[in-house]
Length: 400
Length: 169
Image (cartoon, rainbow over all chains, first blue to last red; front, side, top):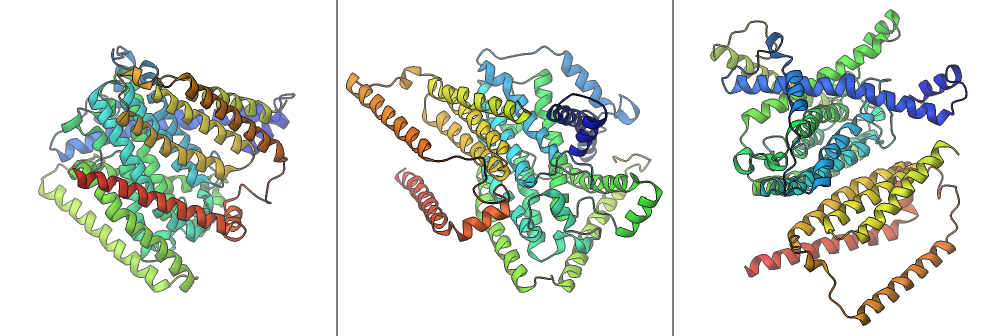
């Protein structure tokens, strides 16, 4: 990114100071990421989620706008734009207006540090991982503001729940991530990825027996921090109407939901970077692709990364529509009585493991990989069994 | 004037204005949110000083802390009754408080004056997390451990206080 700015500074905009060019390039990059990647991704994820939900609930789901209803999100967006901008009389007006933008800001700033491939990253911060956690914390402030500013009891209860939940689940998230930080010795996402390889047994996930546990803890607490079911108590429909976004309508409502779907990508990306080798592709493939064209390895890396992220996006969507919601006290119990202590054990375990076997233990890695492979195979078998036994029509429809 | 200077003034301005907001605002919710803005602006200043780790930790820690403060405000203060917020004290009390504030300000100004702030980092590669970690666990290990014990004690204290209330009911 800085290279690009320097090139432009030297060749095109004579006289413009370097920092101004830098600023323009940064704004441009953010806009490109936002418009061309995050927005379509969030939109299409909303559509995919609705189709999967419909599938699980034995409905059809949106299928009218465009082929298989894939343009439904555009229609919804236009509808929301044209809706009346309602602000409740009891609302704290400035807070009510500001809150969705804060949620949006917190979620999208995260994309600055997320690597898409070895070169495709807005900025490889040396505190990248913490940066992502910090910006997610801004989202929490936005949610509580939305809850309080709406001036409604449902919203406030939702906001309070969001605050309690996000503060609590930040701890297991951080501890689980620490397991990987110990191994990588860095907070920079690119360095963490560089420490892993393309093949599963080179991933941090299978480095030692504690890491799969940490992986599970990280995934669970990220889902909880993103207010997704089974931990979606802040917006529990059956109790709180819709929680902190009850009073929102039109574009502001969309902003909050947009952030939620973009957050799915962030969850997937974080898990992929920390445990699943990020964009790593086999060296042989990389060399072959480099021979074809200089940009080709980047594309392959991007696709690899994207595919891994998509797996988690689908998994989280499936979780949402299959698991029942936990109760508030159960939520806190899961966090403080199970996830946090187990995460501490994981951190200590990884540290000890690194002292005893600094080079790693190959047979343990292969064993863990094999076990994980069996679990994935069983999962696929169950999905296929379900599809066959529910007499689903297996026509070409990627979202069956 | 370079971009850094402009950013410095932006962040410093935000920090000062929002710090005023914390004190002046009659609504405690606004005070808490102004505090968020103050602390985030200070994080921006840290960023300009190349202390990325400090900046990010500032945002991370204080976003959570402000949330807790926010929850306290909503739980403990009855916000529909704004007369509750008025300070009920005589002139003597107000005078004493003002005096205390002035003394505190002078002390602070003196301390700031004594500290020689230069442009150089305190340690080579200060913003770097590994350098910071090494410094904490070698040079500053005793203050670090004391801070750790202090935090643990306060945590246990908080739990005990919460528990006592539970058994009473």
